[in-house]
Image 1 (cartoon, rainbow, N blue to C red):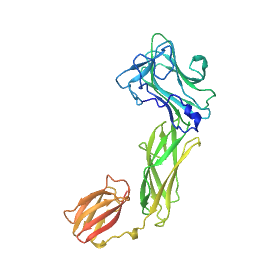
Image 2: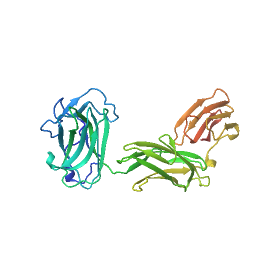
Image 3: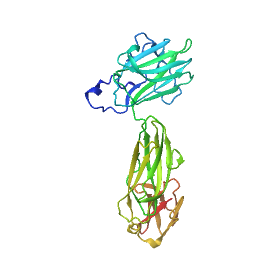
Image 4: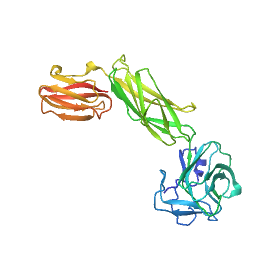
Length: 365
């Protein structure tokens, strides 16, 4: 069922708790070929439904039903109560074999004379599906119906529309969410911090990161495959960001440490921030067992580590979450561990020999 709601009178009974999408019309529910769309007021059948079993060459396609114009001047209406204090985004997909003036209106009743506010007006002439969108910041009083109008500019042709959406959004806004959680690092070592940024506004954004430098230094960042502290996010896009930073070597082990990453956009009208908590580790507190019998090199490493020990049996690589990410059984007193596929950061080697288990820290950079 594609239509989430037809009439939003529930909004009058409580605070506006319905966030995000108000209408998602894909014409999939209960429609029949060459009949007016279900749920829309269209007494003169100036809009009809059709069915085409193929994709429509657009990312937003959600089904095979659509609506198409059936008159020189085609109107259809749906009850949709719009609140004056809210901001809305109207989007849909359209295609035509001719030339059409396409409009979205709002008004008090389902007829042209009562459609008092125009939200969108554009010319559609493309032979491919194109996305049509409008941002509406000011809603006048009395917007109880939304009206869809298509006016043919020439001859016998059709305008097809699909996937109509009405959302409540701000023009410029975004959200951020950490992916990696609490972590532990040695002072002077480098760590990776991952987070997601979602552009939930109407306009595309250029987002700039401002990491705090109280506990960290040597910042670098990759987002959308590009290196830099500013990245681009289209409307509705979710960008995964990875920031690397070095815990300052003077930080005392066990101290409360964190990395704040604040994000801003050029208008300075919206910000977001993620915080990563970090526990500085004490290298001298690691139990290293019978140290003189074990040789680990190179450390730090970028690609591999060699472990040498008398009576070597097995080596495990353990991350800071306690997960075993690699295990190698020895057939001699020397073995080699690959680190190429591991993320940069601190790991532990659990080295098992005939004399017992020894824990050694190793840094991947």
